[in-house]
Length: 78
Image (cartoon, rainbow, N blue to C red; front, side):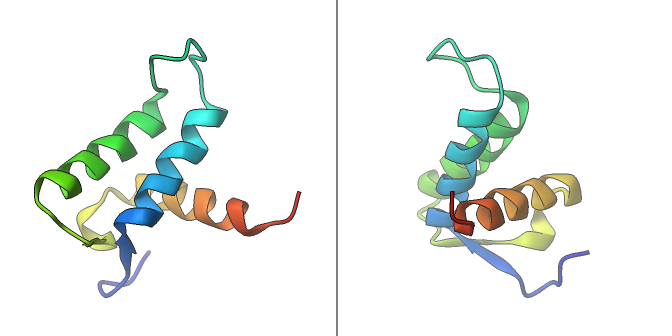
């Protein structure tokens, strides 16, 4: 489980949404897959609330895992 003090910046949330958008269907150029959609909802709320970061403990644990996966995978060389 992620610690209560772990936070994600808005840039990290944006990167995670983009990561999952590229990997999940549908790939029609318009729709988002389930994970990308959930992360995009967090991103949109952060924009609306002018939030620079969000605490991990406020996000569903499964989604936190997917955000972490996206951020970790982006750091690996291709």
